[in-house]
Length: 544
Image 1 (cartoon, rainbow, N blue to C red):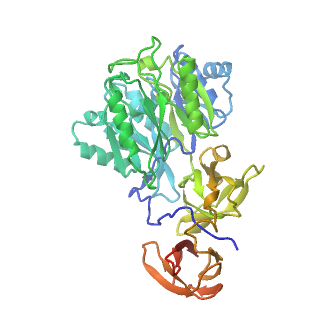
Image 2 (image 1 turned 180 degrees about the horizontal axis):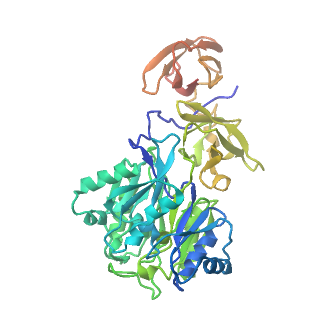
Image 3 (image 1 turned 90 degrees about the vertical axis):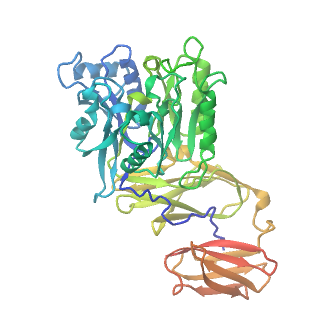
């Protein structure tokens, strides 16, 4: 019989209780598409066209144009895009009044109202009244009207480039937000952002005032959230004035854990110099950056600066951090003198169907077990229609599909028949309302991979009691325990997820049948064996 073992213990105590009624997906989760603004500028139009081309066919692209008398009508814009290799399909021209191309800052925050049945998208409109650009400030309402999405006001002044989130309830911004809202205390600003954006913790990093980028001091100019446990941070030469401050951010972030209890992994990417080979030393200077990139579904659009050594190094960092993504580079030199880059001129739009996966990814060297129970939380409008883990051992040509089972809104799937010399790859997929999401978001191309220390194989591990098997598992409480190579009697206990002992028993022979259906409610339990030499071994029980 196959031994069922869990690689990690997931405590089913609402680990993601944001305490909020809304959810705004981070950029790295699956999106419907992105918004761009047509700038009617000969030096910047190529940047917009290059982004639209790079994103295809991974997502929709909406290009906003002036609805009134304009230097170029939609026919001319469409012809320009075609001439720059942008296909007609999946690219939409939509009318709205704008004044600048910085839609990241004034554009809509598109998320979900979780109180609606079915779950509906909503737009938050943060204040943008300090720049005397009323048309830009009105864009969230204009987009909401065009797309039929309700718009709510977020009663704070700040720009969208000054907030990054991890998808698990934490956000980051710079302390400039405080000066933009002088009538509120710092605590009031923090609590308002948490409430309206559905966050558990909004963290503020000291504004960089010696590294260029203008007065805005946006966090997206020097950091990027790659996934729920990976943060990319710019790396500057030691002589740059803000070097020590940025390194202190790295130290702080590396000591934090996300809502899954995982420490954030900090990855570094060299910040490129200006064209003259120097870096900014004051606020009102050009700030070149590779973190100001665009992640949209399975493509990453990375700024380039005609600096082959730096550009290729940046692309390699993304390739290593984000395997399976398609990487495209777009010249950002027309933008950085204006204190922005690619991320600043784009804004993602959440997909119509609310569906996402949270899972503690398994990577690298692991202690050997011959069967894993993988666990995930799947959030959907109602229950997902289906969910699977796709896995393969070694260099098998195809992935095997194993269905997830739902227990108390946590999903479990078993991968069996593993040998000590195996390397295993896997990814997760869920479907709901004719929509699907993968974890990792790039799916098979970014499949997680792990392998084993064969010296820790079952039967060779010093702490293993013997050959113990539990079947069936999951069960309705009627199960059998088989054993060999065990010294009897063998005591065992069953504990619930709170650590409370709910059943005590003893094995006196190689096979024991248990009926726990009257003792245990549906859920996850832990069956622990202990022999007379004080060796212990623990199994997870899934009771339906």
